[in-house]
Length: 391
Image (cartoon, rainbow, N blue to C red; front, side):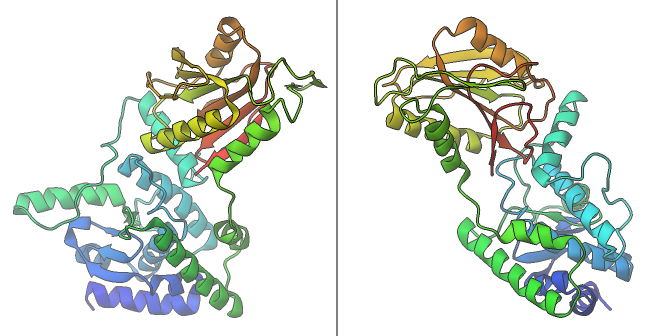
């Protein structure tokens, strides 16, 4: 049989043995594309290198198809958001392979990425991978995805195949979505997933441990940027609540400061500039801060910190907040809080730290003002303050 016939046979077998993955695999159009080196998906297609597919055993092909399905199921084709494409593929592979390996879905092809400290969501794995590579001075190839076309000279094709084989790995990889409308793409993923869940459940073949994962995938989520607004309103708005002092041993409240009815006071925002926050997320955060400024009329300090504070800008109530990031080294949180304590004399209504939390350097004591960690990457363990996960 040729490669396409082998993949068709694999999908059919998975409908009986692993229906959660087999049903969703039937929605991926099989497309032979030698330039991908191994295999990859963009949410609509499963691109494959025919020679690579033929070289796999039947259990390895089952693992590869299930792996592609999980990239789509977990929306990795929609969640890259400008991250380095190679590191994003590695991060997603670690997340998926750990699940499939424990569910004993086929056999992982030789060279697949598994285990270590990379068993979390793709964003968390990405932060760790990217940080470790920065520490070792091994940057990725950049945030742009290379063309998957088959044009060019023979040597060029061979080089592209080798590059993509490394990028997508022996288990297959993920490209950005082929659907220009993200909402439509997400709706298609949800519909295909629910169909597969119903069939797998009815057949009594839902993989162990997937109920929680699926519940998180299909449950509606509150908009993360709206949660930041709610935090400012509930925690920092002195017209509605008292300014809170919080640490591990006390839980006291102060009377409101001398603010007018429509003014919040002073808000501090620090940006983690270690390289883990992409420009798209920064633009959204700046837009949210400006929207809050118009609503609550606060003064704002915006600082940038990697292992040290690189810059702090002040914006009055009537000034548009503009981000001017500097830095790009490792990550430490303590310098930002030290700067506020030493350099800012105003009463702080609230402190927002925009970061991936890929760091364990926190102040030894909670500060005197409320703190919100606006976190990319899914982490949520902090010694003080509240956490909002940015997606």
